[in-house]
Image (cartoon, rainbow, N blue to C red; front, side, top):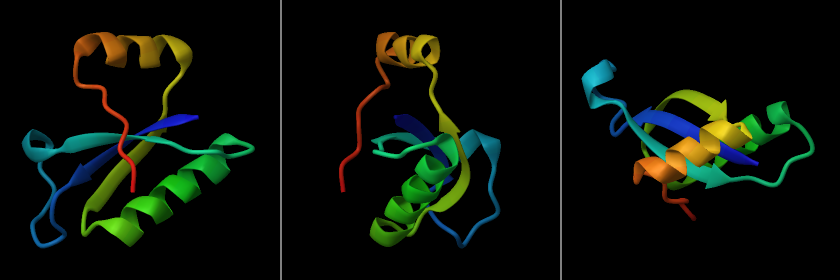
Length: 76
């Protein structure tokens, strides 16, 4: 399952939509909820990011992200 994690680079400032960034994680999980929990844990263990939202990418959405050129899986 591929998850898109929206985040701010620091927890020090208030989140602003204009500075929101995203990363993509491939998480092995039995369902969507477990995947979101694992994704959050991975990001929190390896970064100091302020996580805003975690989204499971459906097949069509994933295809769009790959075509947009911004898609790159993050590995910790």
